[in-house]
Length: 443
Image 1 (cartoon, rainbow, N blue to C red):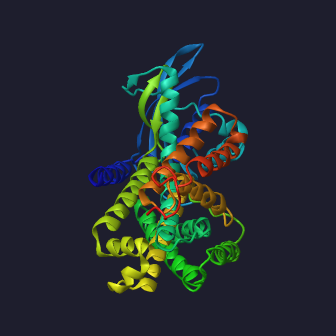
Image 2: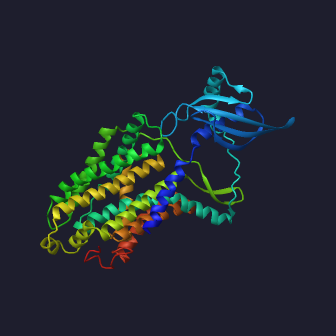
């Protein structure tokens, strides 16, 4: 399993690094073609890198009623690339007849590309993919499963954060959704700093964002958890639970003041679709960024399993979770272990925030609440306190949400999820991988 996760991560990153054509720039360049060929039926044949930096070339054909089919091309040049916010700004356009003048380019952008007609004028690209033909129902189902992969990775990482803390201390920290939002803000800040330092590669920006998200999530979790879990030593878990509610609200407001209420979005990267199968004209596809986020999530989850099963930290965690007094007699430092666990759980939450930014572009200061709530449901369904159960629960909740949205009324999706939680609490309170009786705590 470890080798599989490493392979997914490496292949996703390497494949994404080889994607030289930006999907957003391709869309803008394709959208200009109808304005260059009024009344013609356009078929895009090929999209490739252009002859100059930050450019791409589109080869296409134009069919008209009063003349034979013409083979043409367009070369579009853009202001930036990668994670730059103005990467889709068209700065030059050339055809086989020569480059457009500055005035013509301005008129094209101002009175066509920036209008609803121009945005809807993208003729798309003809798919020449040699993929297997499958039944339409199977194609639709497979596409929904592929779409659900990033969501399941995000829920699994957040569920693991809940399981780490509950398994060790018997306490639930309700602030992990907000820690994911802090990880998202840190990702954008780290990527922006990298871009401001002159880096243009999306991989460099995401690496900087990843480091920032891990640090921000771990540090905020360790400090906040120390005061809400470590310092509240009452036998009942209710005072600590209420304190984590306060921590959640504090982090939400703190993020609103630091980030501002306006959500900052990163432009999409590595979003050109890879075809997997087809059902007539419907292509089942996966984007490179989906492969990257899924691979990172799988690698992180598998690494965490390895950490808990084979390292001295993992042995101490499992011993303290089983019997704190016996573990303390054998030399386990409980307070230090709790801080380490809080930092590790916060890093997982921060990583989930980074995946949200990479996959969806951004997350608002209050957007982490729903993620945290659904991840808690996933942890309970999988078996609260069980790390493998949390991963299984995250996968189950992510797949459930996606398939419900695909086949059933989407407005009832959250109600159905909360109803499933009630069913599990009644008939299987220990979760999928826990005991039927939640006492003793499953670890």
